[in-house]
Image (cartoon, rainbow, N blue to C red; front, top):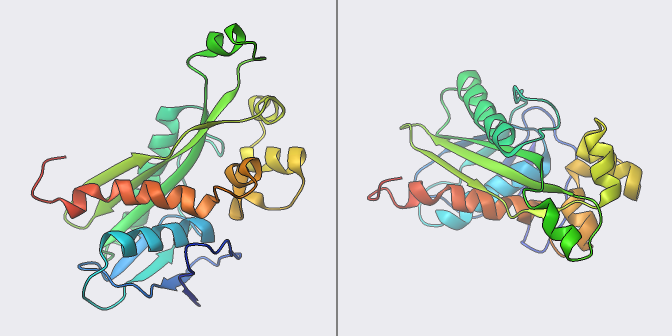
Length: 221
């Protein structure tokens, strides 16, 4: 099944199969196959558009495919380090499953406790809130690794309490805000911003940043 990369203003997404493919309208300089270690259509499209932006020149359009790969960490990572490890594990699992790809991309969302909980109370805020973010790891066939973290934002107390109680963030969002399968749609960042920041774009910027070492190969990273 083929999906055309949508314009930047689009918020469309759909349920992906294990081998969903996106053919990008933009072209890349080097890769022919990019494997995203997830079947989440939001993550696949974010990776496709990030590669198109960073390598927009000559060459046939690459295939960007999603593959179901376990993270090797809890379904809801509860620390920065665990979240990064999940992204790394996904990349390594994707490479082991399909070593013929040119690039492998892992995107892992997670939460962590606020390292400055006293600041909120000093300014009149309530209980300490959880921070939400995602890590992106990109591995090239030559062994080059790029990684970046998305912007961080705070989850509301209602969501934070459910996640601390053992609920995955996507499910907690559904309880607090309503909706079904929000993690493959707008996610908490979209719900909290009224889609001013959509989940695809939120991930896309971090993938762009993770591609910095590949665009600047003359430099050391």
